[in-house]
Length: 319
Figure (tube, one colour):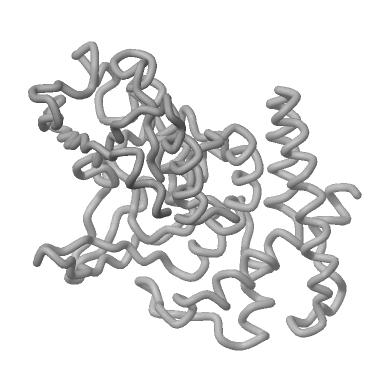
């Protein structure tokens, strides 16, 4: 299996003529090699294998298949185009090249929330979605290998039921902790530092920077993006999770060493993830002001709201 063999599409290939079993098999084999290289700490090998996967016909075909078969397949971006025909899908595979790639700005729409407010959603073009799906195939094996074993949000083959099971295992013991910390980062998607992500997310830096700086279009006007990640991108949940790996470690190691924290998003992370490098001037993230609650702590404009609530052991007997 060499780069030339993987990168070239079969001569005269048609969409319905693609052997999807072979495509999945080639991608899985490359992903398994990425996992092995990550476990061995061979970072240059990981980069080489990621390059091989993102330039392979199988990787590109699988990425196009994903974005043309998911729920958003009929939702266009700013170019108002979708890939509905087999000919368009084959043409899309051939067009997915790193050289000369320039992502389009996102089409911003506002999604209503239950509290009456709105949440901005950025919709990429089909090509940008496919490129993100392609690089997700290369990034996910390494990220899963290094992930916290007790994180469950936005992870393949994991669900809320798995988080509930782990909560029961940890909290049903006689000597278990009686407190659970629930935390929410205010404006998380909007405030993550681009520089930090580019320096720490183990993927193609040039491509990642282009995605982060693509901007968005709202009411026919284009706006730049200086910070934050778009809500709506295929690769966004994974880059968010990678960005959040060490925040929980800081909480556990510095302030709540005695606490056992059970959370679906246990992998909340990085004390340098927000704008400006030295973001945490305090020695800890949360200030405990009463017996059963944690107050809002504002750190250079980033609000982190946490509330601790007590769960008695007998309550988990009903799980």
